[in-house]
Image (tube, rainbow, N blue to C red; front, side, top):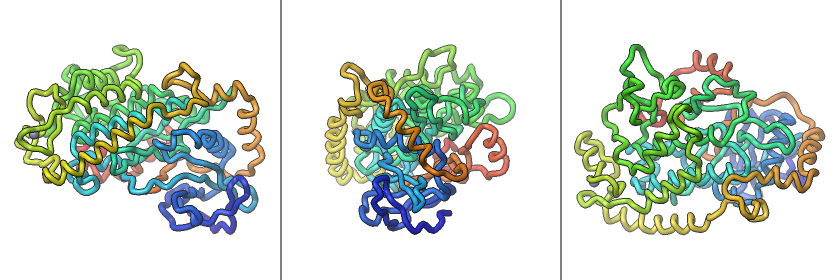
Length: 457
Ligand SMILES: [Zn+2]
């Protein structure tokens, strides 16, 4: 709970007034800023730790870049009457909805009524763009999960919970992300101590691949299937044991694709190969496909979609010989995309053009001032800037020392301006490896498995 705060100010000492409450969780609450309705204040229940305040301060150094097009990026600290860091300023994401609402026909119909598979392909590409933009800044998302990605009606996305990202500290150890959702965590981290392990973009791209898979493959988790061995095979264990259900080696790993799913053969070989690579055991790969590789493959897929002759709501890869959605709907009786053809076509064509324009307008996520002239998507402007101006690094430390802070906050960050995240994430999220085991023992299983949000059948 957030205590009564008589006076909050920004870093320049300007007073801030709380408006409507937009959400509340274990760490505190998010309020709309009374003076600027497009801005929000995330107020923590307790003063921030030195490390958390330092992390936010480093993050705000990027707030003037284009990263705000992909994220709800913090723009500054919020201080209380004693000068202690109590929260952060961030933009409100109007009308953003959790990405898992796109997974199943029923939730799509309710939350994204005009979305078809072409829309899903574009959202997938935009998620990859957002990941690439974060990685280009030298940051790691760490806690990849669908509750931290909001999708807007035009198919663009916003990453939230930015204050849980792993951020680089020039000349020092990164400020870590210590939380995770297991079903998006790469196998090599399942037994790792998250409160001390340094994450990499390659870890993020495992979760990215899972998310893209769920978008393109009707919400199915790539590791949720029939186990042909003895006993049960929870998704977390299947990930740790590299049992990709839809891959070419699934049978070797005693896994079988569940009923009422589509095979990966519906996808172009270029996209299927990225999934195989992302989910392969380390002995069979060097590095997972990067966000940039996903963007390229998904852009190509978007450009090569076929339009079903029997059902105008169906778009599918041109590489497939027949429309897989006609076959799926006929065999299961499930209507995947049921927007009336005329309405759908008119509305979606307009949205599609806007989306293409938006994407075309974002050739580089980082402004030239922060990017080396010849660098591409893998740059670390913090390190570059720090090398030029050592004061940048020390400034963060000095600020942290100056800020009076109280007790440590819970490290779980469960904030969204739209707080309607999947309940199962609250169940499975863990703060550390050790805490996770205890929490998992106590909490009930996800109540939304049927929705496909976590791969349930
Ligand atoms: Zn069809």
